Length: 393
Image (cartoon, rainbow, N blue to C red):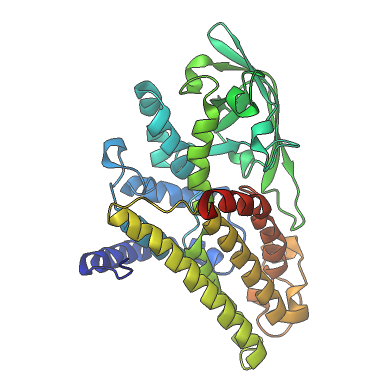
């Protein structure tokens, strides 16, 4: 196992760093470094900048218009973007559905859908979870009935992240009730502007509408939007989830937020508290350990060995780390972390408080929001069961 980067890889890192610093809008990086709200224009604006360069699909092979980077290069790209304060790439298009279309879609589907994903022009949403079908994804009930050359879709999806911005949605739908639940699921692409699609935002504890309910009422979907074979969607879903859970670990964002935690601790005067510094040190050790786990996977891919089947482990540890740094930021700021007046903060004012109020204003929002990380993408309790079965034997 070789965890050292080669001179060529270090040169690649410098190239990425220079390009990101020259092209990332400063107002966007300021928002990211201070955990301020990112608008759709912020997120999609950065996606289009990457798309123009050919880097939005940074994990894509050359045959589909990607840069054809190695696993190590992809990691370095993500790290440099995160440390520079770039918005996290909204993963549903380029990171999640695109690999499924490449692996299981036909040539016409690849030609039709991949260019819009690569350019950042088309915003994709994920239609997996339903009321009662979260971690137990095989129990989805949204029904798609084949009628001639189209499917009629009825049902409901929930917790659809940023679905209010979606142009298209990839869905798990039930096309059969025979046999095991997994055997009757299909993978269907739905135009969210179709008649009968209703998106209803869900307001969260932090005041944001990050997730949504999506209702399908006799929605007509052309049969040509079916990926692969009917009733084989569970296979495609598992392929996609391996990308999602690795992406959730997000070790590069944790490295950036660790530095933000240190800045807040110094501003608030708790940096010299040895007990508090112990907690920061413990967090940093876990982040380094998570990074080493990621690098082990990269080393295995680089050497041509079988990649470690540890997406669940990465998800568990990464999500727990995100909750810990948010909690430590709250503890560092003490009572100054609590005021959260959304409208006032958007206007640049958050009360007459001393100290690092600019940095502290969004801390409660971040803390509340990151309570979700150990639940979405398959709850950590379920992931531990999967790890016990597949890794420990």
